[in-house]
Image (cartoon, rainbow, N blue to C red; front, side):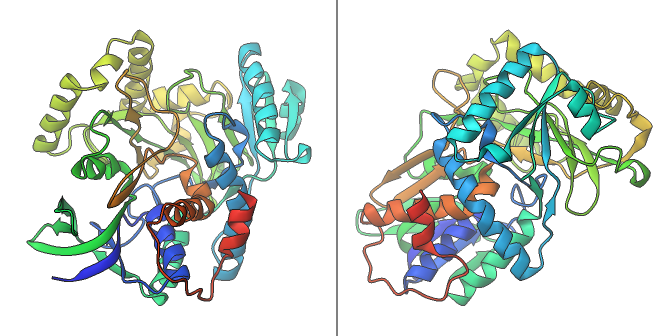
Length: 432
């Protein structure tokens, strides 16, 4: 039976970047297990590609994500220039539609400064200034950040995989973890098709499946999760420059991990509107509503008996979901929501659906959405759960923070052997 020092589960942007950092610091036998045929097949490629500035992140509850996003900006920029990956500096307008939402913009302005952005990075605009900048956008006010960039996180992940492989990481693609057994001496990982191997330590970065993997290691039993698909519509080419800046709006429902539809300027030149947040049974249900019947029944049972049931007694949540579902069934309903801030657009400006992505927020025992990343560990494993947006933006720095924690906890108690690096690990940690 093959044996590894470190086994990483999940080949998204986070798992791949962690594999890179560890392999660049140590001569270890490392494997990364990914159930798909390549890395970044799910959330890491199925996203807007926006590299966010952390003005909207609460520095009290999301400070680590905010810091990681801020540090990672330059790291992504350097890699994009080196590897010829798109870097389209679109800027963003965070739009308020009324006075109440304007109060959120004022709060975001303070948060942005606390999170490390400079005053030059953030400008509050009134309605006339918004219209002057974008004649087809209407709103009460907006927070403008010129730093926002559209790029390609899937391309970034595939490039990082190449560097990690050069350092010796083995990528075990097309293999799904079935079970994990710890007998006190070693950890055995069982894959489908009767494949198994052992590892001294496991790092779980399985995205929408990360809670399931943690529970295989007897952790996070008190938590549950739900899966929501975000859908988009692509503007026909002749309408793609109707608005030249990426537009977000202040979320109508605070306390939920969803966004109202926005206008996205993509790195490939396209413009999209979306997303909604449609409940689905699995983190891979990219079309339809039920997925395979076994998964659907299993998820329904979990909802009826778990934390999610408490959400179903929340009238605000039910109101939100009904609106989101309607905008999935009806393109007109989706566009009507966008017309609140871009009145000129019409449903017939959009004839093709964009790439759907899935978010899997974790639900606490009290029936509330967990607002931040959850990191758990035991003697043989470390788990990163609820790593949602802007997770891709902050992945280079956040993954370095994780590796530092593993070093300080003694999980990486091996002689260091620093290899040629695309990024400077010590420099990242010094900025934390």
